[in-house]
Amino acid sequence: MDLGIKGSTALVLGAGGGLGGAIARALAREGATLAIADVDGAALEATAAAIAAAGGSAQAFVWDIVHTSGPESRLDDILAATGGIDILVNNTGGPPPSPISGVAVADWRKQFEAMVLSVIAITDAVLPGMRERRFGRIITSASSGVIAPIPNLGLSNALRSTLVGWSKTLAREVAPDNITSNIIVPGRIATARIKALDAAKAKRENRAVEDVRAESLAAIPMGRYGDPEEYADAVAFLASRRASYITGSIVRVDGGYIANV
Figure (tube, rainbow, N blue to C red):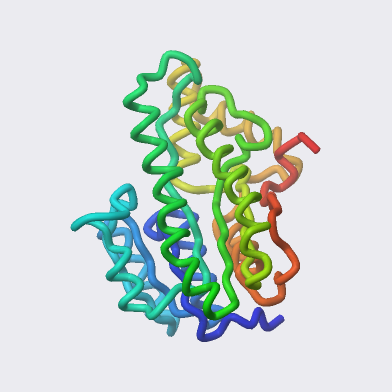
């Protein structure tokens, strides 16, 4: 299937990580030109190198996206270098595990700025160009915690749920300009983040990490963790012209893991 995005320009945030890197590679395989951003320069360069080795094109921008204005922002650089963004993948790192109560206000503020305000500001920066070209795809990677809150991930559950309401509202506003806005939700995808969460749970419960992982696998109908490439392929479809009538949605890529309807 031709996804119809050859020659489009995509900006993938968090492209040095497992999910972000896979998404960037998937979009590049479809012929999109990539701008990729991450706070980890070495990981970002590895993603850029993988894209180049496969015959794609990517410009790398080392950027802590909490800085969306001022001298540390890369927004103006990215827009100038690319001439505008057609596909935006909002993919931010997750906060540390924590309960929902007793979290310092400063920690709430820090994570809100990093996970919510940054996404809103970056999206607002690319929307004028999308509207002018009458094409745009805004895809925001969330967490299964927005559907079924995950114990001890209080910050993530609350803040990512904020983005669900934002994305749904945005979808109605931008639909007349042929722009879509969707949330994509990973289940247990085999990334460094999931490995770290399994290890944290094992330590918290004084259990072997192998037992924690086995318990997780038993809860997944497919009996395995997902591959980042499987998640990335779903993102690539949502980014495509073939997905022009899908907007305001929450799309799960979870192997059946999330039990809620």
